[in-house]
Image (cartoon, rainbow, N blue to C red; front, side):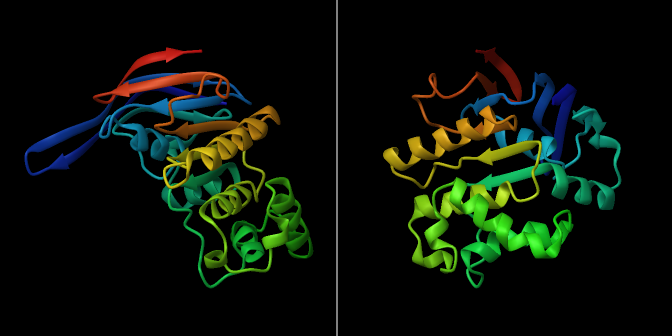
Length: 224
């Protein structure tokens, strides 16, 4: 599902080029749940941004489900990303003036992959799947952090993406809620969606299929 070859990303700074990723090669099959770990500044978020088509590599290849996205023009890449990648963030990124259901419908409204009459029913189905159907018509501020993150996961699934990218999705949650959210990602992966989670959680052995550790922009561990 994810194939990275010789992936390098450098940023220009006042002190010169800063290599955020260095010659990263990685394969992730469909339905695998991978934890991406490493110290702050190791390149974890940069890796997710390149896989998700948010940024372009300086060199190397990024292929998702056989599609080489590193060669796509920006406009085409944005449309591809909306159809194929679901993002989950540490701070939820829910729009405060939209209801929970409307937040989940928003990606469907943008991409129009789902017919208009089917968008709210699909949103409710997804909210039920993540356990917050009863919150559908509330504003995000009325929900707990764990509930908001579940809504964010439902939103990420709105357009049936082949890959879910989660950047510190449990960083704002207590340990019990964090464990429940990670278990939800496990269930999503069991359904065939590839899941990459950047996380500092320690007790992951029973949840993930593999751990990929980065240090100074390089993979230093890639093990089941």
